[in-house]
Image 1 (cartoon, rainbow, N blue to C red):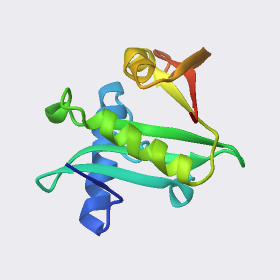
Image 2: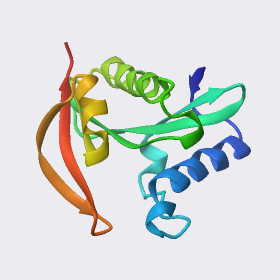
Image 3: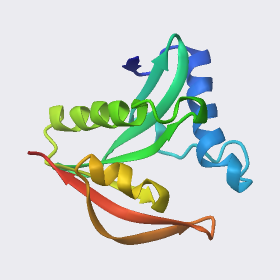
Length: 143
């Protein structure tokens, strides 16, 4: 497995397509809804297995001491193989290298155990996406 930033037009297309297929299409959202106006500011990472994109995630700067992980998604084909954990660790390491003291994220209810096992603390219920996907604010502090 290779974790890195997409580096060609095709890789960027695959990156956003995976985001869309996992995080938006199942809820009948339109193509393009997988992007926001902060794409150019984020640290993007993708997991590749034998040249195929398997997972994606983005790290955003919140303030001097805090970063936020957003848009984490692993292809259904590759789920259960440790890709999400490896990608999460890579994004966290980026945050620590930037001098951040904590990482925040808004986890879908289905992912609470995944993030809990990775050391994230549940803070509180946050937003309801698309009127049906409950999210929870979680944080992890640098050890």
